[in-house]
Image (cartoon, rainbow, N blue to C red; front, side, top):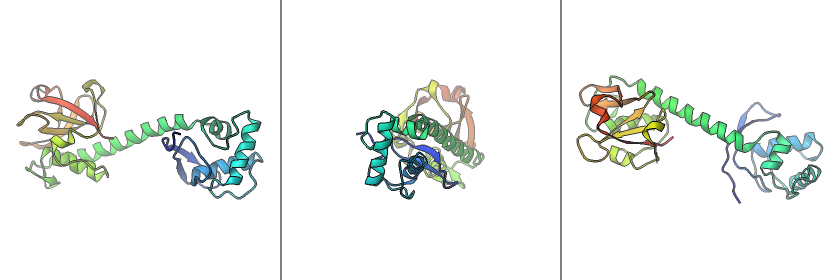
Length: 226
């Protein structure tokens, strides 16, 4: 059965902490704040009598069965999508799409913010610090600063993530070019409107555009790692 594929942001009646649901099905034996919220809802409607402790016990399973019977749902004691919607009033699948989109956008913004603060740092072959970067060292550093691990060199960076068509580029995507050697020999981070930030051997970290005369004929492809 499909489990632990959805992340949803939920707030609890008994705490101000925001937590995250981690599956589209909750079973006996599961634990966490997601289970606690379900217990709260069952308790509010009179199906659950024990304390709210975030533990999906056999007693809680029986409470779920009773709720499902009343709601004309399959009485299997499992909190699946239909039972979750009936009990909580919202869809885990819908929340997953919203949270995933917001999360990717937030990470991309942080990536770009980190990169833009480095404009003007000089070029240095093999450089991976703000004292000097080469192209892939710059990309590696920016993502590393945001807790995302990438390979060190452009040719290997070109093998990670998933391919992205040029017309579908998004902020934070990696863009690659064939320059001094065949294949992916130069890389940068896509911004918006055709702009990308990269390390030039002559000017250091700078913003360029895919339509620039030099770059438009050297573009190789893009990868999405966020």
